Length: 225
Image (cartoon, rainbow, N blue to C red; front, side, top):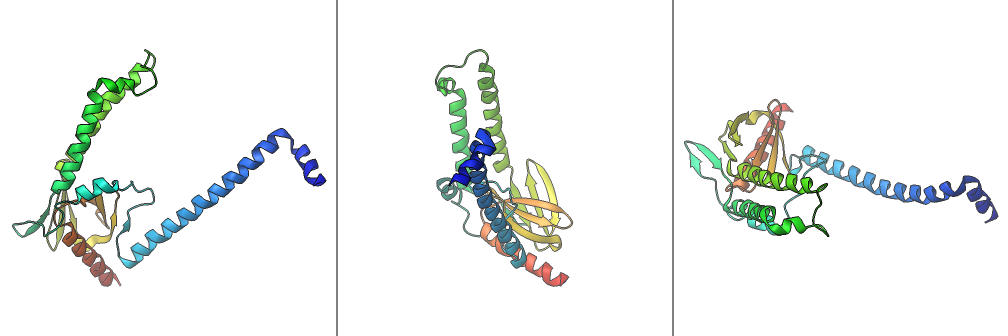
């Protein structure tokens, strides 16, 4: 005990303060490292097995359970077919979710109570922050509406055509290497060559689409083996 006391005296006051902090930091660092390793192993397992895992390590969070439940309304059943192509469009559920969220944003952005979020009304030095937020919130709401309502995916046995924000891109199934869950809204399909395609996972006929896409992944792997 005397030796420990002498050692604490030698490292001084700062050392006595920093040492517990370093111990706590090391403990939490170990937990983070363990979780990172586990997530990376899980992603690698899904990729090797050709199943649906996370799209990336820094994946967006999933929708809260109650929103996800509503967003799934209308996703069952087959996708409509047009000129030999199956067409995936946003479900009625996800439209209701995004419109509800946009309504909440619009209400709070235009409400006089918005200026009373803090413990006291903003002064001139901080008022610009609230003004910027009031401008950005409607823009975020508009982005959400366009993101969902302009989403469409068409596919046949040869190609996948994705439209998002009025931009149309085509991908060939023979180049598909992996399909993953991108978080709140999208499935992410990886093509080499071709890049990534994002398909709204709250779409009518999405179950049939996932089965077809996973079949293409397995088919391509057998062809490359």
